[in-house]
Length: 116
Figure (cartoon, rainbow, N blue to C red):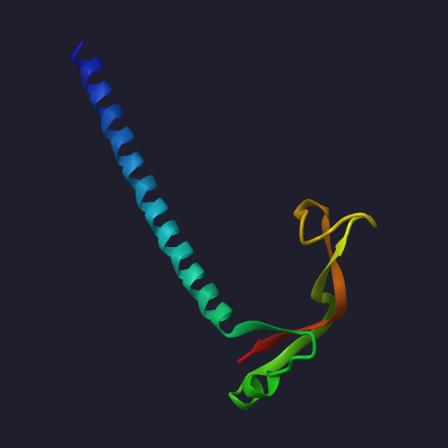
């Protein structure tokens, strides 16, 4: 009987020691992931996306501050909207429910990806 008690104590001790070791490994893993996240944030701070639309352009200010254009592309974008009546009999001033908003002027949006 004493043998079984000592054997069960031994198993409990082994279980306790192995569980502590796993907890330590998880903490090391958490530290590694935190370091990777801070490293990714540092890299992200050196990249920026700037958008100019409908004829605006102020990229020269960034280029003068040491930023370099990595990628540039354009997309179509609605610059202004206008309201028109939904039917011929509709009065926009009296009945707000018959007003439709449609694009008036379509321009281009320039997107710059900058890196420092």
